[in-house]
Image (cartoon, rainbow, N blue to C red; front, side, top):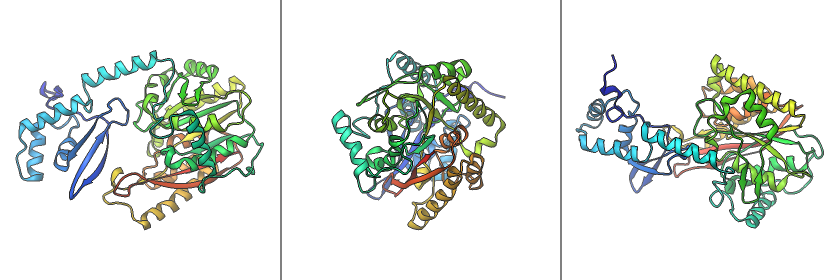
Length: 413
């Protein structure tokens, strides 16, 4: 039987879907929390005992029950005033589910719908904000020793069908992006780009499409209105979470490369899609049905437009280390073993085998957290190509504990 107290979020708080990372100051270890959806711009640094407390903010544990667990774990009483202050701090930062957070979401959604374009949110942070400097930066990624340089591609002049690209910070991974965008630059140009990005904060409905044009320091990248309107008719439900595009970086990071390096005579249009489902979930019939429905609608909308499309899957591969839930930092051996697994997994992507790609990750029980699974899986099911090719593979270090993200550039013709 549910009591009134059980419904009281003050007594049964629910933590939102936040991200966290360990940090070290001297000999002390802390956990820093932030909101990947961008609804809250705040960060909160907690000692490990407080992190233990909030891990039980799941709506099922009362503050009294959490106090008992705390006593058992740490051997000391949790003072009610301290935990109530913690709840108040989390609520003020929009880190808890509840009326305050819902009100902030409604306000943000309204502001996004009223805006003329989706603004550049990461210019000046992840890449140059000045137009001229950004063009120089992009050119530098191509000519750097890790980049592809300007030698002609062996696929020059062919119709490109798809790309897999990173979503890691361009200022660090730019040369890896450049390997993929060189193929787009030198190919027979498609009419439209279907850019499927990873929704790092997650989505309730698995997909989110927006009808907003995207702004960057290089100008506006317009959406393809006929395809967007067709999708609104076929699958209107996938426009309900388009606010997710406001703070998600995975599509924005692609656009300066698209604007600088495509050889199209006319400005290229795009269909911006965010996706969020795991390899483990595609065996669930309801998830499978949702994915099938969306991909069928996308095929129909593109076909009805009569346009040639290139699908760009923006996503990362493995996530290793304490930041991502492992008990210890990765070693050189564990990283090289993961690299071997990545390249084995990407063989199925090269061979355009979506179910085998999913099966590889399922067999691993997704222990390496392949965050870009959903966009890559969608690409494999949407395109009709002869073959894919891994162009470049690399990794980024994300914290002082050597936590590691791997990523690759691929092209499909």
